[in-house]
Image: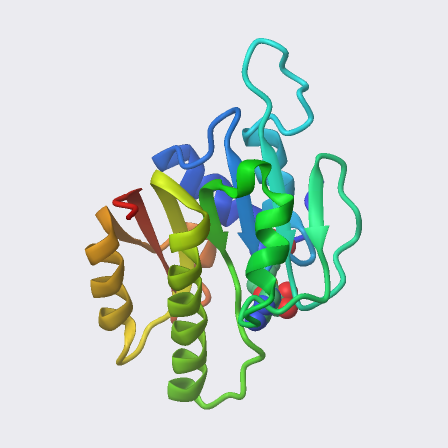
Length: 190
Ligand code: SAM
């Protein structure tokens, strides 16, 4: 039982493209109510349920409160756009680093399409800046965006920093026509 239908988007992406592996450390941005974190806990073996493979780690962050979830650590009422959040994240991730950064973040929609688009793009760009400090070389970033004039800018920034960048439109988000994801793999690091 998942906390939200959004789980099926991540399951679909992960079944097709294998983003999450046992033993991985995952940062889940915009994690409330926690469905993606539920998927991540299973796929990285964060509970150590499968003794034959490595045990992973899941850290979820959201502006809202997130109910506790076995196998995950949550930073509730925390703004990813706030500079002090980086230190909090670093102190909770094992060795301060993540193999995968997930972002299903979405700002409160104003209904003004272009404005909502820009707000989400700037959240993603901020996350990309933060990834310099926390993402392992060859790491992965998966981020939601709403289509619009600045999507190409985000895509180009991702291409500078990752070897492989693709656009994904999961079946499970078909009804939300403006929503897509960038999957950026093989982080070049610094
Ligand atoms: N992936 C989640 C799940 O499966 O349960 C659903 C995420 S929901 C679509 C988007 C979330 O992004 C909201 O809970 C919202 O509070 C969060 N969010 C938006 N802006 C944020 C920010 N600046 N920092 C942290 N979280 C943010």
